[in-house]
Structures are given as structure tokens and as C-alpha cells.
Amino acid sequence: MKKIISTVFLFLLLAPQVQAISNGENLANEKCGACHLMGQITKEKLSRMAAPPYWIIGKKFQAANNNREESIISMMDYVYNPSAEKMLFPKETRERFGLMPSQKGLISESELRAVVEYIIDNSSK
Ligand code: HEC
Image (tube, rainbow, N blue to C red; front, side, top):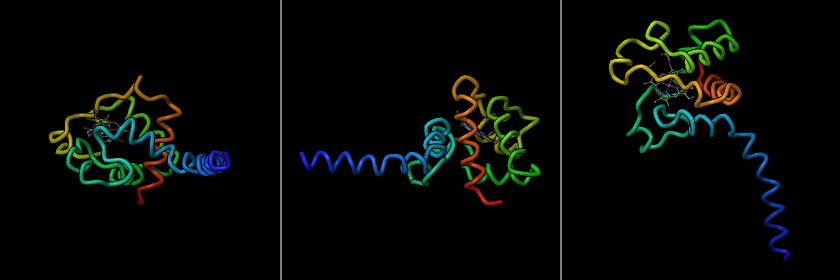
């Protein structure tokens, strides 16, 4: 009984922190990780990479926009409405990986915002 109580206590102690640290990162892995390298770099992820990794995306959007909020808005727009004209990556990226398919209906706006904030805040300018 004592063991159960201490296990439950430990879980309650750790669970909220784990969630707070990695909500955006977890979602990024889940929703974008099939193509993009998101979160921790592993050999396995590198071997199946089918789109640019998150930190290069973050740098591009920060360089092309005036501030954090603008970077977030324009990245969210791209994810729902990608197009060759809007692409910040050079055309070689499209030739190699193809144009990104729209993620409309696959990720909610609030989830996407958490993902995009994670990307922007974890890639230096
Ligand atoms: C089915 C594969 C796939 C998924 C899933 C995917 N992407 Fe992409 N993404 C691509 C490819 C391919 C490119 C490179 C071509 C392009 O820019 O359209 C790309 C490019 C991008 C770009 C750069 C656009 C630019 O300016 O060139 C952003 C931003 C982006 N993805 C964000 C996301 C986010 C955020 C998610 C998850 C919500 C996501 N992607 C999910 C394939 C994917």
C-alpha cells in the first residue's frame, strides 16, 4: 500500500512538468514528424527525413518576418495553405521533397500555434 501511494505521489509530482515542457514538441513530433525532423535528432529520423528540419524552418521565418508574432502567423498560414509562390525555401527544396501538402483538417489552430511557437522559439535567428 505504501509503495502504491508513493508511486502515485511521484507520478503526480512529475506528470505536470513533463507535459509543460514538451506539449509543442510532442505535437510537432506527432503531427509534422512523419516528414520533418522535429524534436530530438536521431539517426532513424535523419534517415527518413522528407522535408527540412524544424530549426532551419524557424530561422527562415524569423529572417523573413519583422517579429515573433508575424513569424508565427505566416508559418501557420503556410501549413494550412502552402504554395510554390509563398515558399521561403529555394526551388531545389521543392524539387527534392515536393511541395508540402496542406495540413488543413489534420491539426487544429490551437495545436498548430503550439507547434509553430515551439519551432520559432527553439531555432535561433
Ligand atoms: C507529408 C509531409 C509533411 C508533413 C506532414 C508536414 N510537412 Fe511541412 N513541409 C513538407 C515539405 C515536403 C516541405 C518543403 C517544400 C515546401 O516548402 O512546401 C515542407 C515545408 C514546410 C515549411 C516551410 C515552407 C517554406 O516557406 O518553404 C514549414 C513552415 C512547414 N513545412 C511546417 C510544417 C508543420 C508545422 C507541420 C506540422 C503541422 C508540417 N510542416 C507537416 C512536408 C510536410
